Image 1 (tube, rainbow, N blue to C red):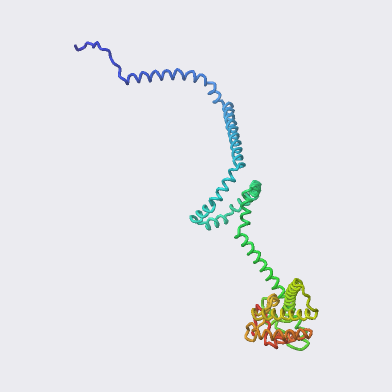
Image 2: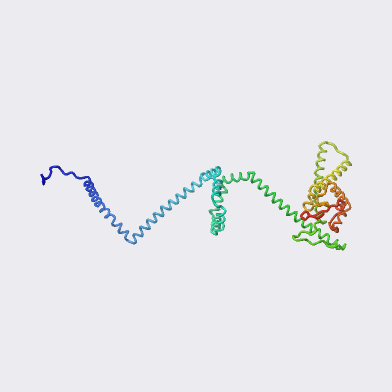
Length: 367
């Protein structure tokens, strides 16, 4: 009937149960927060005080600094332990074996404008300042010292020194340096001898009332292309020493061979053989050099060259004729060389006989 209550009990909805539990939890939290606030009240008071607050902050900072220092110290010790172990050397060996550096360089060169980067870096004043600071740093010196004392560096240096490419490069550099040194010495000797040429001719030409030679051209080079008495005498001296060295070396070999055979030739025969051998050595020496290159080693050292009327090296017949004329010029106490002082083309007796002239090799002559 309407207005009457049903006898069944009322069932609560799930949402009502959740709201009840939430309310209970809120009450419990408020009840628990009250003692906590009560306990932290003195701390809040100290924090609000200027002196207490600064003290607390300084304490926190000291604790942080202490912790940071301990962490940095332990980190440095760990890094030092790693660097002192075999790991860096093993890594370096692996990089060398796998050509890591070469591949990285190739990749960088292929993907970047290296010239532009290097130019920009070298032109910057900061780069120079940084480099100077790094070079002046004691840490850099220690690092370089440790690197030079490393076993890996010693092994790499040994391999590099034993490489054929490096040895060839060193040989080429030494050979080029010796060649430059020799060329410089020869140029100085030739220049000094050419000044002697002019000094020897000047009084003789004045005595014979002949016109003086032209003065030196530009660059301290003689205006006369023909070789004078001083340079020719120096070249002949060098050639004479070379011929006698060859002769003595050959004679020693012959004497050793005779001693091994056990035969002792007569004294007169030995002297005749030695004279003939000396003449053959002299003839072969001068004739072969004159015909092949137009200059002997002594003439090359003094920058001289012998040419015929056509301006070419003399042939074998002309070279033999010139050798005979030179022998006659020397036999008469070198009187055959005196025409060099007065002749317009500075010719000696052998040049008149063979129709040749001796010129400065770097100037040439008209023959």
